[in-house]
Length: 313
Ligand SMILES: Nc1nc2c(c(=O)[nH]1)N[C@H]1C(S)=C(S)[C@@H](COP(=O)(O)O)O[C@H]1N2
Ligand SMILES: [Mo]
Image (tube, rainbow, N blue to C red):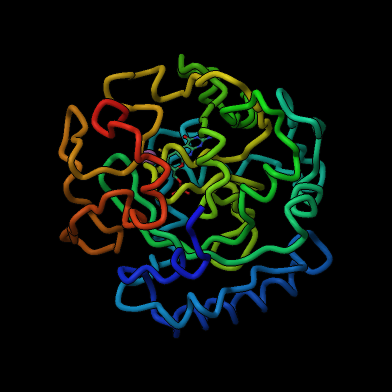
């Protein structure tokens, strides 16, 4: 693939000021001491090429990002998710992700195992994040490239898609009993998409381990797709040969496609996708134009060169 890491990180529209990133890193160092000895010991190493190229736009304020969440297993109210997750007694150390299907290295892995398989270190990535509901944020994730893990798991030659599932335990997420959705929350990518260097598995945000409302202890981040693809609190990864069912697509196939690439030219049946509201806490909404592939066109367009983006929304 014609792709250099540098191009991915040097997006001109990106993202935050070096100053903010620096403060953020200092904050991380402080917090990593508090979490010392755990899987976060390695920390999230920022990419200096990236840092130097940052201009203009602002990182979403931490307290806004961490109190404006979509996590339907807990609540349909974005402001309420944070409170609802508090009763979740999350034990990160015993969390396992089951890997099954058309893959040589099937098994049940701890978060530490997954990080080791992906090369043993974690890094920080600042990505734009665009929800299908037409709001956006700029978020500093900590974690590792999904593709590194995928390669280490040795998918078999028949594998063409990768499926992710969240927990299906109503003792954790009460709405699993209350809402008749096709639980567990399930999402999927083509294997090619999953191997793209921008596809990321996050274990942290703002230099700290992921809080529960953000999808602890591990969640997907696919920055060129609508936010609903970025599934939280992953418990299962399945390699398969056919396009999988995905939760929103199953619930409303005319509204939410499998690909869900951010596209200002393909409106949602009930609203326009041409613009987005920046989550900045201001009383009057700040709007900006939505970019094709959420601004990552240069990096990802080759994945879709033979795909009709309108038919395959
Ligand atoms: N398991 C699970 N993952 C999920 C969701 C969810 O309800 N459950 N919501 C999705 C949607 S619609 C969005 S926009 C993002 C929100 O992530 P954030 O709360 O960290 O911003 O998570 C996605 N992942
Ligand atoms: Mo979303």
